[in-house]
Image (cartoon, rainbow, N blue to C red; front, side, top):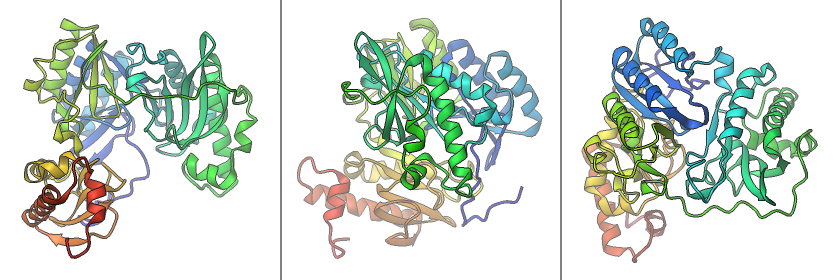
Length: 444
């Protein structure tokens, strides 16, 4: 495999899996897709043991509700495959693995304010794995099944959404294409039992429409903008949009001790096999013996009501913890184009600029201009290149930096100066993004 330039991000063109490992800076990375995001404690312990025996002991929580093991080599793949097959977590082949990008509301069945959508999500996962007619979906094409409640996925953007809504004494799914709950385009309703077939029909229609347009665009939102939804609204199994109450989602609240689970996050979605094993033990001793994966760099432990052990594991229970505002990719050592210690530098930013970081939607430290950990704009973005940083505000890693070519120390000093301005001038309650947008060039 040709190495990427240390100053040029690589566009890999696929998503990693177990059967499609990705070569990164610390060896092979494998992403374990977990149906409905639910692991038993026994499965979790086995995954931790595999990461210890075959990898470098590091575990990532992905933004699509999966687990990633790092630091494997080619010799470790056959025993990994055998072990994952024995616990029901190995796909039949690369193609079926690649299309099973199903994000499920993690508190389904635990949250009395939401609908239990686990059966629908598992049925969708099984249909995608078995149906050869959907194998032409593009990389990163995603599905979402949400039951609402305080663990909702309203702000998760995806290609096809199935959002549960009340229908008399039962439930139906509102089907929408290309976006968040607020931005995706609704195309109809479907019954829970019909969801897998409707999904397969949507997938085939997407593949056919793209083929007629020379293979572009690659995602559903772009295709809908170009072609409209007419080809989708007439699909079998879809019912017309009825006068049902629209999906309403309360403020999301999953961290800490909740009625039904304990939610714990980890900075940068990074933990290790010892911590993962300890969490499995906690789930066995105190809860229902289950761990739920989320897209928020967090885990839910159903039935666990005591968080005293979590601090020693490096977990975060408080949603206001400033570390949860930080996003960072793997950086040097974890990515073959990374040249800075992005995790350490992001934590240093939280120390040097605590007020600004706490008031931000996100503060992002990226190892290159690709911005894998946070492609969207952030209140403050540091983008590395050849061991130095470009710094910008309300910008993405791919944008040209306002202050380019700074050493890590100079970059920290620049953000600390912005923090001082925020503390001196910002009105109470004003977010970091809004404040930074008001500053004139002379202030910066």
